[in-house]
Length: 225
Image (tube, rainbow, N blue to C red; front, side, top):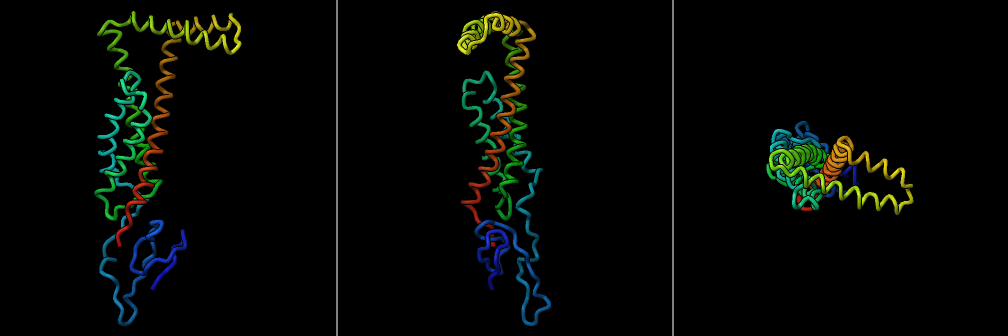
């Protein structure tokens, strides 16, 4: 006997716990009161809800992948230009590894996005801490403060001033803006803003990577009957 899935309206065998098309868990009816009919043995085992996450295992995977991804995404990493990609890949990989130990090996896009969110939070905190520690080490331990100051002076005097001039901003406003950026407060605020923007983008891409990982897994796996 076949039933119809309430989500995608595809035919589902009565012996299936999940819709083979969209993966929606199906209602199961006991046949213990029907004469001459016995319930399938597999119904005695509880079925895991694909929309829930076993966080005890998921947290270990997220942490193991988020920390190296966060280091690669830090501002001074030689491969930081691909930082957003690293974080998205780490989140998708965490979802794939999480599914290896799950029975049935099935997960919803929402659950994958939540795993990606945790991966992004852990990775962005790691990127934030790594960027700050690198700045501290370069300035106070390696005594590269002068080179950092010269680089910042060049960026503000050449690039920023040129862009504002091309945008038609008057010279007095540009001078005030340059003075603020070259002050200790301005430098700290600019650097903090850049790091916070990086953190927000890493979290966004991690959530997308987790959701995409769950979607890709749904195409390659089918709920176990």
